[in-house]
Length: 456
Image 1 (cartoon, rainbow, N blue to C red):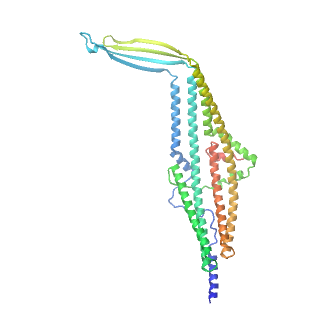
Image 2 (image 1 turned 135 degrees about the horizontal axis):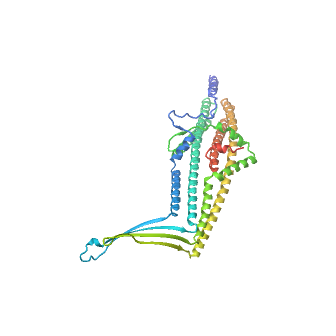
Image 3 (image 1 turned 90 degrees about the horizontal axis):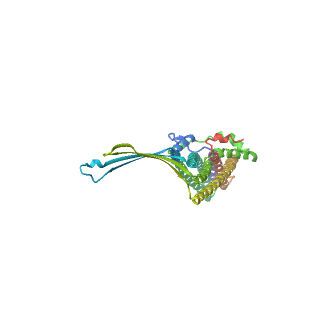
């Protein structure tokens, strides 16, 4: 009777095991759907909101306004400089028979000073201020591109974190299925208790991983909100639109890769605002040398002064005093001037080294970025194939495990292989997008299309 019951129990367990769904638990995009009321934003909308919300960009734009005002102020110094002074007084003691008002007197002096010759210093200073304005504009554009790059990184970060949550949910579902099958086998006396405990431990581990993935997603969402100023979920990226450029990148040989790097660097030399800032700083330093040398030359200025006065006793005199003077100033402290020129020369050499160093660093960053991009593209392809193999392998092992032809550890290994390859696939796809955004910023470009068009 007991033997018959055992055979019936085992048969029942096998039927139960085979009844578990054989549908793939690791299919991409099987995560939870978004609430209907959830706000969705595209990456273009995120960029626009981030630009409008950026305090550092607003500060950089104010620096441009400040530089323009400084440039105007320097241009005003070349104009005639008028001034007006008014002086009033009361004479005492009052003589016999005179009133207190008779001692009242007022005078007004108007003077105009015009620089005639200053060795070109004003022209040089105007050029320095103009370069400062260009530098402020370049810094503002650098901040503009930085905001775009940061927004892209945050946007992709949320999508990658959401994909990780979906993956963790699939891992947990697979572990729960494993646990349920192990429990059913244990109840039928097919496996020992330790097999169930191991499956339970695996499920608990996946629950912890899911909690961590959800925490990471919340952090990424907060980061994106801090940039855009709005709580919204990013719209999924249509990776199919990148199939053509990814195919080109994957097929690049060393010669084509070098050509791509060269095209990006050529663009950077023209459009990268950070590189422009260093170049402008060098030009400013060179102009500072010219300004220091100009201090050796004499300066000539003319001044016209006219005074009108009024007194109670003498009445109004519109031309009580006047003068026209020409002043020539010759510098004599040549040791100080020489020291200033030498100091400015050293500063210019330092600026030149900074500019050359920035160019070399930028070229290396572009080169490294291109190699990273190509590696990411190839990783997308290889990890996708590996994931497909791991999924097929898991499906086979799952069926064998249900039939007791594979061990619990075999199924765990198959699950781990799927999980690992899926994580690699997710990382590779978003690394590709992030590398595109980084290279776009390095090349000084604002659109992906312009960058992708350089791939031959």
